[in-house]
Length: 220
Image 1 (cartoon, rainbow, N blue to C red):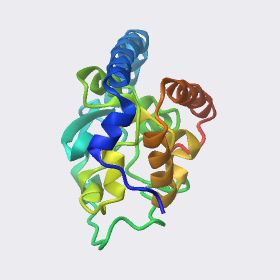
Image 2: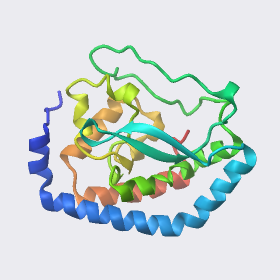
Image 3: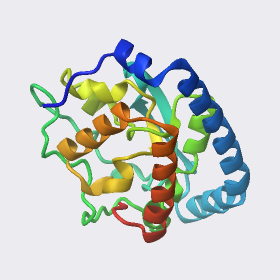
């Protein structure tokens, strides 16, 4: 069984200096990313609005560090027509999120996803606006995948460990399966990242992210 962590032990392990350096790197990388990706983001926004009238951005509440909610920014990949809107998922779990739970399946065919949406999901272009989340400070470049409150409200004490750090655009779990892994597998990888967080590990994750995105492995 994984040894429990708490906020104080994590802060002692990570250290104030490490946290400061990570934040500086987040600011620099997000600024560079926004500048370099601006032409791509403009083209994606135009394509989204050309295919399906409506906002280019999708804004949703996610759970951040220390269980604090924040608004995540993504490019919209779903249709906006009222008869295409799906009801929000409701979960009735007891004692935590089941280990075998998988939020998305890579072989799912969702009729509500637009043609542009399918492309930007497969290439991860839909996540580019999260660079602004990193710049604002409610996300990091590297960290656990940000979950929706409908899921995190069911976390047990051990699962809440993954909320000790800021969620990330990419992370150890994201580059080792992305949407293919079960909740139990994802949790184990998130615990590993939290306990072994370092600049060297972050650089490894960034490099693996480039490889995963180029192959579109596990994207939905």
